[in-house]
Amino acid sequence: MRQVAAQTGRQVAIDTADVSLFRGRVDLRNFRVVDHDAGPLATFERLDIRFRPLDLLRGHVRIVDATLAAPTIRIVRLAPRQFNVSDLVRPGGAGPGRLGFTIDRLVIRDGSITLEDRTSTPARTWQIDGVSVDARDASTTTAGPAGTVSLQARVANGPLQLALRDVRLAPLALRGSPRPPFISGAKWQLTFTSPTTRRSATRNARSISRVNTVALSP
Figure 1 (cartoon, rainbow, N blue to C red):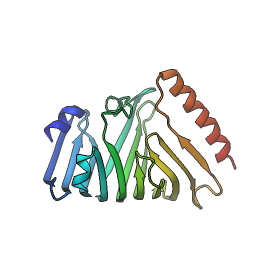
Figure 2 (figure 1 turned 120 degrees about the vertical axis):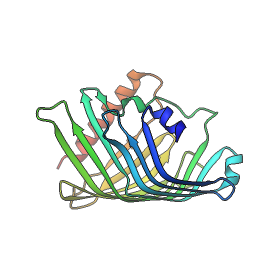
Figure 3 (figure 1 turned 135 degrees about the vertical axis):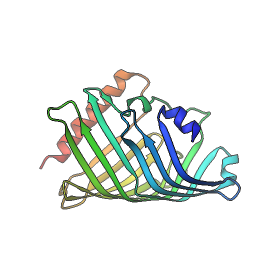
Figure 4 (figure 1 turned 90 degrees about the horizontal axis):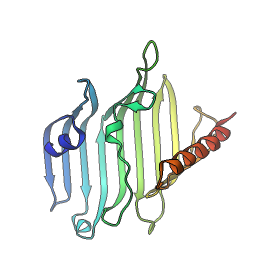
């Protein structure tokens, strides 16, 4: 936890942690990150991970099965281009020294996301509850089939369902469509390459925004 606190610059606490590299198991209970304003940044009740220890010797992290229970995250907009997590988002690429990463299955249950906008008067808050995710076969490698992700949540007391396919982690790419009754018939595609300059990243983001705007129009 000291390393996590040092890397995030925030207070980090956890009730119990059971890590066994040889058995390929990580079990964490009641994890909490306190933000600079003393409010919660991220929490979860339980995280159970099963991985393949031998793959670590080959420079690859392969998670066979993972379950994340009751995670929460709070995103706060402090200024037009500043968020409470801005210092945590650092540009980086998939260099040759980085580990490969594969998730055979990840299940998230009963999550919630709080979005605050303190730039408006009065400040506004949005809540996304009941977040459930089932992700399969997501990887930074292209050797196997692309992954899939299904997501369910409640936004403003209305249901949100997303079905994602062709999921790749490096570069991040996916295709998907919301399921009724959230947005009927909407389809979109999102691909992030690793931009070498801020200019190319801005251009790519604008292009994606234009495509999505057309696709989501009734």
